[in-house]
Length: 408
Image 1 (cartoon, rainbow, N blue to C red):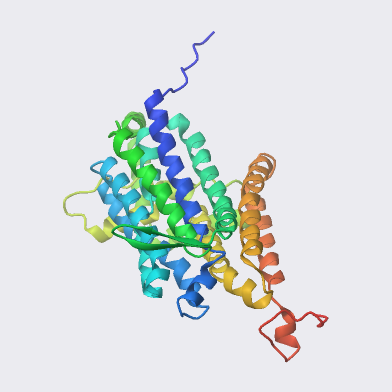
Image 2 (image 1 turned 120 degrees about the horizontal axis):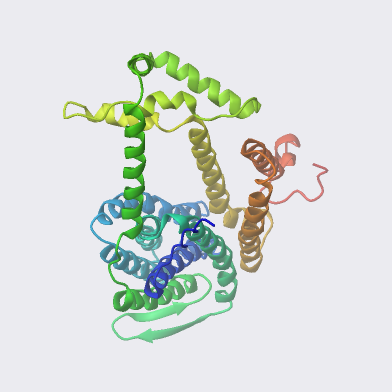
C-alpha cells in the first residue's frame, strides 16, 4: 500500500515551552476576571462611585490593544524578551493594583490595571503557536489555547470567592503594610503567581526555532510553483480573458461580492469564493506600487464570509465585555448580591463555554455554518432581551432595585 505520511512530532522541550505559553494565557484570563466580583466594592472603598468599576475592568483590554502592536513587532526579532517583559508587567501591575487601598487612591488601581493590560501575552502566544508548531498540529494547539482561556475565565471569579474569606494585614520591610482582603487579595495572589511564572520563564524558556514558519513558507512556495506551472500551459486566449476580468470595474467586483454574501444567508448554491479569484490573480507588486494600493489589495482578499465572521466576533466581544463590566455594579444595586454570588455567576458562565463549544463543534458536522451562526446569534439576542427589566420601562416607576411586586 501507499506509505502514510509520518505524523508531525515535536521534542519534549518544545512541548514544555508550548505548555508555558498556554499556561500564560490561562493565568492572564484568570487575572482578567478575578477582579470582577469585587470591583465595585473596591472602587467604593477608594472613594469612587460605582461606575468607575467598569473603567477599572476596561483598563486591561484598553492597554492590551496598545501593547499588542508593540509585541507584534517585537516578536519579529525574538520571543524570550517580550515573554519576560509581559510577565514582569503582569506581576508589577497586580502589585500596584493591590496597593491602591493602602494609598486610598483609585488612580493607583487604574494604573495597576493598565500595567496589567500592557503585559497581555495573547499576541505573543498566538505568534509563537503560528511560528513554532507544525501546520498539522495547529488545530490541536489552538484547541488547547481556547480551553485555557475558558478555564481561566471560570476559575478567576471562583478564586475571588476564596480570597474574599481572607482579612488580615502584615508588614514587609521596604514596602510597608500589606492589607490582604477580598478587594486586594486578587492583586496580591496574581502577583505571586506571576512572580513564580516569571522565574520559571527566565531560567527555562529559550529562543525557539521557527520551524512552523519555515514549513508554512515551504508549502506556499510549492503552491506558487504549482500555480506557475499551470499558468504556463494556459493559452493566449485564456490569458486575455483573465486580464480583462482583472481590470473589471470596482462596481462589478463589489456586485459579485454582494451576490456571494446573499448566497451565504439564503443557502442557495455553494459559496466557493469564485468572485475573488480575479483579485488573487493580480500581478506582483512593483516599486511603483503605493502603500494605499497594497492595503486595498490585501483588504480585497478578505472575502464577505470572513468579514461577516469578524463582525460577529466583534459584536460578541463587545457584548460580553459590556456585561462583564456592569455585572458587579448591577448585582450589587439591583439584587443586593454578595461577592460569593457574583463570583459563582462568573464561574458558571465561564464553565458553560467549554461544553457549548464542544456541542457547536459536533453540530457543525451535520449543519451548515450559516445555520449555526443564525442559531447562536438568535440565542444571544434572546438572552440580551431577557436581561431587560421591562417593569422599569413600562410601569413608570423605575427604581434602583429589583421590582419584586411588579408583574412585569
